[in-house]
Length: 330
Image (cartoon, rainbow, N blue to C red):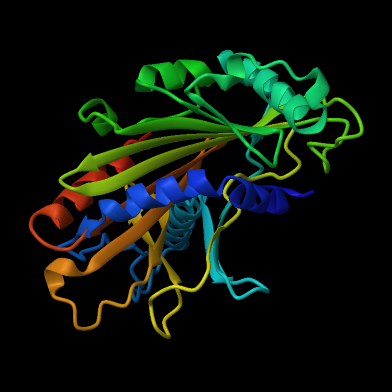
């Protein structure tokens, strides 16, 4: 089972969890009064003739350095389309292999493998299964995938400490607002069976290979989710965000997903818009559904905003985005 199949299995086996998340997103979709975007800066075309070779060398060196800097500050690329079943798909591909040594993850998340192991017994060897800590209210186990669990937290600090990875960068507004949802999703695999993380033939020796910290806010009736993806050396795939798939859609003949990019603080962020059929709908009821992606220092970042147009929500959304993008400063 590869990563794409694994995540697809999660979607099929934890439908209630995904439905709850989607319901939260839909309930608080609000609006945008500004479509203004930060323009991508490009080197101006030079028409001047330089008489001195030294000046030409200096100019070419400056332009090359600028171009190299811009390319180097592109965290990754987004692809959109449809799969073989006609579902709309979107994927984010970072510029580098995102796997880090598991030794860099030092929090109690390393102990989450005990929940996966208990769940394996529950699913594959119930006679030897003894309910334990994995049955706590803040822990959700999968009914179809032993090596997967979700853990909810009351505070950001608890979640940060539970992971224990210094690579993650957090925007300042996370301290200014109270989140309504904090959880970590964890996938574990057995290094002996990288393509069969829940092989029922042998008791697995799980290792943490995929971590997603998700934090949800409702700010000016804008639903905002921030996601942080960390993957370890035990993952067979070099990136975390493979795709988002949605069957059907209400956008008429338009593609469900369209992509764009924006440059801010000398970094090119990738954007994905989910299109909606808003014909005949007033501007205040038009839905805005956009997601931004970035990868830096072996961490993949994702912020999503859902809201209806109108009021000051567009200005608030733009300010949240700016604060999020500015957090990746030198």
